[in-house]
Structures are given as C-alpha cells and as structure tokens.
Length: 364
Image (cartoon, rainbow, N blue to C red; front, side, top):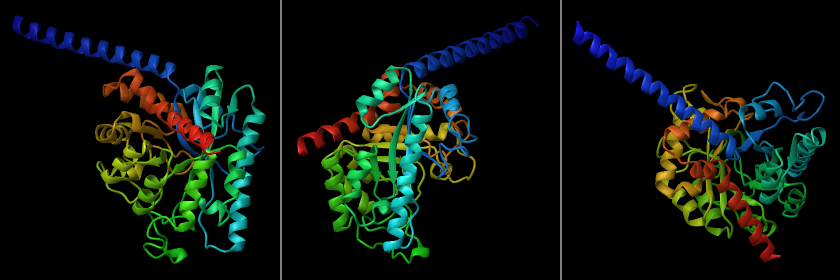
C-alpha cells in the first residue's frame, strides 16, 4: 500500500510539474508575442472591402481590425489580386480596373480608421506605425496579369503603395509560366520555358522601383529565372515546401537554396492542402513543421509566415487573425528564441524590403 501511495505521489508531482512547465511556456510565449511585430504577408480582400457592405472593423471575415487586435496580428499585407483570364485587350483593361479597385479599397480602410491602422509603403513606415501602437496595412499585388503587357503600370502600382508584385497566378500570363497551367485557358505545360522576355523586363523594373519580386505561383523555371536575375532579394509571399509535403505550389530544395543565395525569404503559408495530404486536417504544428524544415535547410533569416486568409487559407489553430498567438506558441514550443521569432514574424521581410528600397535608390 505504501508503495502504491509513493508511486501515485510521484505521478501526481510529475503532472503538476508538467502543468507548471506548460503554464510557464504559455506565459513566456505571450510575452514574446506582445514584444515582436507579427506580420502576415498574404490576406486576400473582396471587391467590396472597406465599404458599407464590408466594414473592415468587424466584418465576418478571417481578418478584421478587431480580430487583429485581439489576436495580436500587427501587420497585414492586403492583396490586390486579379484572377487569370484569356489574354486580350479587353481582359487586360478589365484586370487593370479590378486591380485599381482593390488598391482604392485598401486606401479606404486606412481613411476610415486612421486612429487604428496606417498604410506603410516602406519598411521604415511599418516600424514607425508599429512603434506608435497602430495596426499596419501594407499592399501586395498577386498576378502580373493585372499589368497585361504594359510595363509602365508598375510605376502606378508603386505610387499606390505596392510593396511586392506576384509575377503569375494559376495559369500562364505574359510574364511567366505558372506552377499550375490551366486547361481552361488552353495552357501548354510551359509557354515561355520560364520567364518571358517581357518577364525579365518586369523583374528589372521592379528592382528599379523598389518593389519585391514575388515568386509564389510561378513554375520552377520561372521562379529560378526570376530569383537568379533579380538584383534585389525575392519573396515567396505564400508558399510551403516539398521537403515536408509535395504539392505543385510548394518549393523544392533547389528552389529554396536559390532563394538563400539570392538573400530572399520564403513565407510559409497556412494553406491546408499545401501542408499535408489530408484535406481539412492541417494544424499549426504542421505549419511549423514546414518552417522547421526550411530553417534547417536555408537558415532562419530566410523564413517568414503567411496565412492566405480570404483566399482559402486557414488551418486548425490558426483559422483567423484572432488565433495568431497559437503560431507564436508553437514556435516557442519548438525552441525558437525571441530573436528568431521576431525574424520569422516580420524582421526578415522588412529587412529584404529595405534592401530592395536601397537598391532602387542607387539605381535611380
């Protein structure tokens, strides 16, 4: 009987120690989450964003200003996305108009709630707004179809606040081949064998303007061409890795090493079907599995985080801005330091954006 009591007491003590240890870990994670700037590089918006139909303060969406505050999501790249269509003069004009509509919507957001959120077009502005206690909005463009064949449109996008520019989406365009050719557009497997001649001009112009080249959605050869040609670091704004789970949208080791050599950053995305084979089963743990793999291969200075909220993203434990802390908690569980977590959440992206800005200043 005494032996049973002794064993029971040891088990009870162990449980209490584990509970105390877990409580301490959560407390430490919360403190880190408060101190670092969290930045999500990919949140899609509807066409009626920041209107009477979609109030960004409290709209029923994965991200609104209230859930950003409650979840500790400090900075969001809102996305100017246009879908791919057949390419002709009419669809080029329509794509440009759709893009400008979304630029206007993001500007309305900060005009509606200037005390809550500000628009940052540079890394320095993002840091300043964060220091003032405001939420931060930044702008990324998804799908180069939005410029058609007009290189001058990039300067207009820069003037409207674009900080990164996605070369391609689902389906080839005039800039690059897509990782996912589309039969509905009569796509051949590879139209340009990578970047087109126009695509190289686009990369050069993005470098000149200080806009990051986003290689997510690009075919492997397009991605390698852009990464090796760009004089500034590139960003994969929302991608995961084949080393954990193979998917056409994920990056393989050769691509990751090319990004490392270029000095760029891979933003691991919380998109269920890019993380594992079971639809609807991916969790924060698996998101961080992809982060771990990428950190081990190319270094913590080349890794970041994105959600693709509003565009199909969301996983168990991080299905909205209000659950952002859970990502920090898992990073702490895996042994990442506060400095590393700060780099992953925002430091790396802001560093390469600043490098792109500095290059543009020299080129101009």
